[in-house]
Amino acid sequence: MNKYIELLAPYIKKTLYPYQLKFVGDSSRWRIVNKSRQIGFSLTVALDAISGALVRERNQLIVSASKKNAEIVLNYVRGHLESMNMLPAVDKEGYIELCNGKHIMVCSTNWRTARGFNGDVYLDEFAFTIRDKEIWQAIVPSITAVNGRVTVISTPKSRIDKFWQIWERKSEKWSKHCVTIHDAIRDGFPVDIEELRELFDPEEFAQAYECIPLDTTDSYIPYNLIEPCLYDPGSEAFEAVALNVPESKGKRNFVYGVDIGRTKDETAVAETFRLDKVVWCCGIQSWQKMPFRTQKEKLSNILGQPGTQLMAIDKGGIGMNLHEDLQYLYPEKVRGVSFAPAVKERLAKKVKIAFEEKRVRIPNDPSLVSHILSIRRSANKTSTFSYNSEDSEHHGDKFWALALAIDWSAGNKIINFRFM
Image (cartoon, rainbow, N blue to C red; front, top):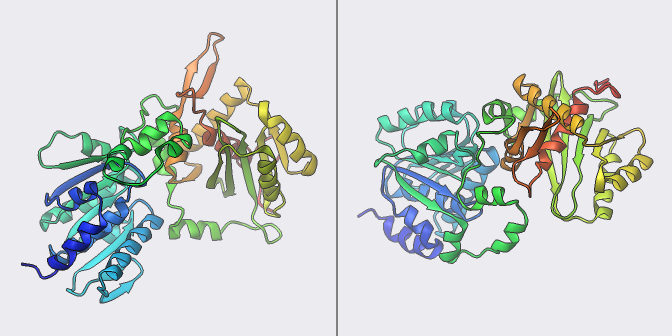
């Protein structure tokens, strides 16, 4: 018997919940997990990889959807090894070699690094992996050629990505694990589900926690347009771009789009800069049920930064007072926009064209992507179109914040957005 089993078995048993134990105990060569968010599967994958290296005696490769997530998984590996008083032979960025000579390596969506890898592979958060089909075609044939194990793990995203195609495939080859937030709670995982429900609209909650993908068949901007414009915020490629942003008086120029919310809707703040003809979205802040006085303070802090060139704010309805106060304080930086039907149509079309022409880059943020996919176009009786989220409780706030930022970053009649 492998000498490491006696060390691993009791630790695994006391560390994992039943749904995690079921996955780790699955000896199938082909495994796929359709899981809820925030139920400890990164920790589980790390322990399963240690077991694969020590018990199966095979090298382990974990391909994550982002550099940040890859680092999280490897830190869990380090934590498990420390808890078992097992020092690695080599420990460096992205790579740990164990005492038996087998290694655990992580990378983020880099199939060039992974090509030719000899061992077992995990495709972590595969539904949110950029260029998932290319990674699948590059990695899986080389793994199967050496009889390696393939494990695909993800929270679902849409019904058209590679992860969902594998999950829906009628094949006895795949061992399938579906773990919703409700399954995890029944197995003892501690989480306040009602608190989580308050943070998401029903469709988002179902996708994030109940293993149900978004229905994107009628999306105004389909995922095949979005995917080529995604980037990993922690990647070296993005850092290189960010460092090369032209500076004005020593400060970068940022344009913000703000969609105001208070109770049911969130306030979404999109931060962008422009490099050549491409608008880069650095990220989206989301403020839920935040008092207006706090929102005003936060937006004022952003406007007070020398690098802030302009902020376009939704000034309709509940946004009117915030817009007036901020424009009074920063008249040169604040622009108000009323979301009249004609304005929403112009903004929505501009965003779609930006994706079609690949003149926008957005972070690989599941929430932002889901807001973009949620926007539908429907005809009105007046021969015009409406652009709204399909769910009455969800208005695509992050989409409209991004649309405002793109509108002004890409060049609006009132301002010529150019780095000086």
